[in-house]
Image (cartoon, rainbow, N blue to C red; front, top):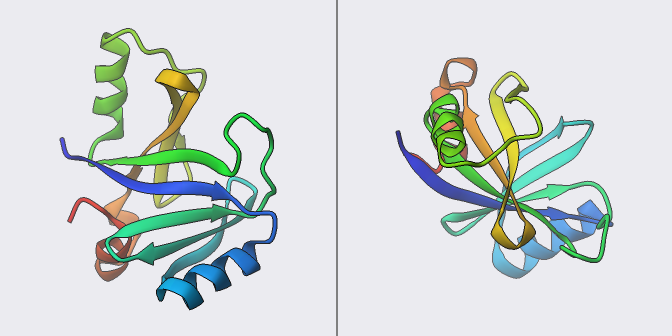
Length: 135
């Protein structure tokens, strides 16, 4: 099983303004712009890193604009079972959004983690290579 820190997920009170800033200031490239989990999500690449913007203003003062860290795995079911065996509990089951399977879990200090797997059989290989951090 492979695991990699994939992206930071940020709330954006004005998603177009945020994307414009990272593109103009740092030459970021848009990897995808689609609706996921009921809101517009735009992922950009910034060098070898990725940022995923969520089209909503920050929800609370505790985490500010940072929503979660995205941890990519090649086998989400195995990773979840491993974490459960170490005592971590999950409030929800793994959700499937077609090309993306994910579950959220809280790490120490209230850091929210998205554990996810990109379903390679549901996405063109060239798109998978662009989006995945496991290549």
